Length: 296
Image 1 (cartoon, rainbow, N blue to C red):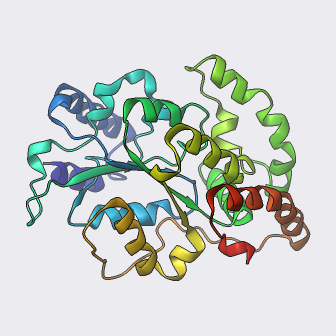
Image 2 (cartoon, rainbow, N blue to C red):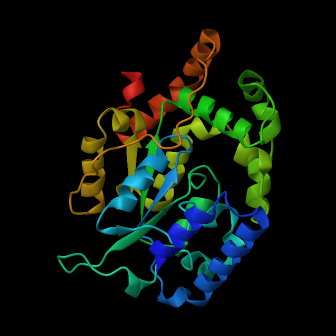
């Protein structure tokens, strides 16, 4: 059933009027909520970072014979933007337990989701930990300057940004002033700037990883160096599968989904931002016990 819903969604997307698509998605969500008690919950979640290759990793895991993806879309955005909808709404996005079958070994298949704002949102990880005790988390880390630059292009394309990258970086402290405090004080408050304009903030990985380690411990977070991943995806994907306890499997080919090439960054700006992130990257290496490819 979930495969049929996904195929219908892919066919309809871009072919039906926006209002029709919204109505169809609302109907799917309503059906999922009603049957939530019969549905699976995720065993692991990709929590970020945005523009770091999470779509590629999501597609590879979705194809794994022992894994079943959400019924309609990869990013549910429950623990950050839709928490007020409640656990039944969230569970309604996952496959019916009886519909996914079992592997040939007899073990049950598992499901997951990928929401790239979870790692950066100040409340999402704690919510996730309380609601899904034991869930494993994956986080992809891309060279921070490239990630920020790619995120800016992404926001420009979606109409959420109008400033140049250099100007947006200059404006970031002003745009984000007091936003995290507002989000913590009012859990229902959604910060436009924090979601769309935190180019440097989302690339300060040490802050996000520290929050995750505090909430779930180091053992339940697996960090994936995106540069190493795309240099040797099969080797890195094997390590991910072993960490998740999945039978080893490899796709025939790996594509860089959602890639958005753009013109080279001005060298002076890149050098300045590289220096800016140096202390954060060094702190991450020490705290997580890893070696970041872009610092070698």
